Every structure is written in C-alpha cells, then in structure tokens.
Image 1: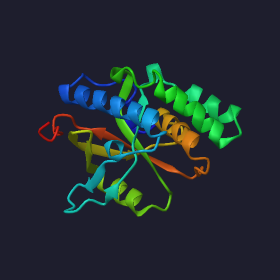
Image 2 (image 1 turned 90 degrees about the vertical axis):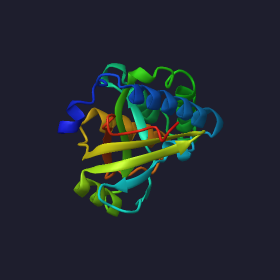
Image 3 (image 1 turned 135 degrees about the vertical axis):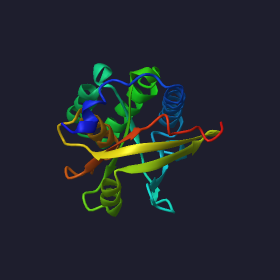
Image 4 (image 1 turned 60 degrees about the horizontal axis):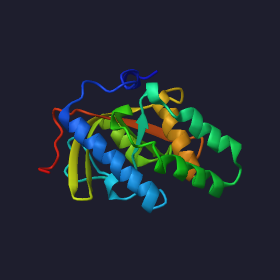
Length: 194
C-alpha cells in the first residue's frame, strides 16, 4: 500500500477549513447528482497548478470517497457487476448518490482522487512534482487547496473506490487507468476569502 494511502482511512483531526470544504463538496456533489444527472461542473473540477509552475495545467475531475470505515465500494462494485446496461448502471448510481451518500461530510476521506489515462502528460508532471494547488470555484465559494500528490496502487482502498465510482458513469473506463490521490495540507490551504 502506498504511504499516502495508509493515512487515508479516517480523516485527521478536523481542521475547520477541512470541515467547511468537505461540507461544501458533499452539498455540490449531491446537487450534481440530483440536478445535473452526475455531469461534473466547476465545483468538482478544480484548476490545477503544479508547484513551481506559473500557469495552471488545466482542470481535473475529482472524486471524494468515504473513509474505510464507511466505505460503499462493495455497493458500487455490485451495481456495476449486476447490470450489463450502462444506462441502468448510471441510473442506479444516480439514485445511490442522490439520496444519503453525501449526507455526512465527516464520513469522507480528506483525500481527493482523479483518474488519468496511462499516457497523460499531466499524470507524469503531477507525479514528478509531488505537490500542486487545486483551485475549486462554484456556487459562490472558492477553495485553494495545497496538496501532496501520490499515484495509488490498484490494491489501495481509494483506488478501488475511485475506479468503481467512475466505472458506473464511464462504461469505457480503461483497466490501465491511473489514479492519483491529492491530500490537502489544511494549514497551508485557504477558502479564497469566502
């Protein structure tokens, strides 16, 4: 298991900014599931700037996953494997994520994750830098998160949670997909003056 993934089972001490950000993320993700049919918007697609770079490299779609104690990965995997029709899978996933999944922000890991194709130049740049800033904006809020970056191994809980989550919405998700974890340093991050 990767060193970063070992500390991601349960959230660290609840820093006020962490609590504020996670509550906001749960709310905007619930809105995305209920009103946008799961299509990501700016609130979950931060602008990424690699440490030391002057310009952002673009936006990524992030996933938040429940900590190990509250994991729903078996349910996500079951939905995927029990239905062959991608539209049915998506519908069942929307039902799950629209109801109570995002109700309790403290059930979620501090880490955010994102998928990349194995030949992504952004993947290589992020892995080499090991640190970046994620700038989230939406619904009248902004958060600037300074994060450590680590590539997850297939056996990591967060890898599995992210892969099965994304597979429900993307039937052509490649088994070669790479997943990065972004662990915010809450003491260095800020709320953009919200």
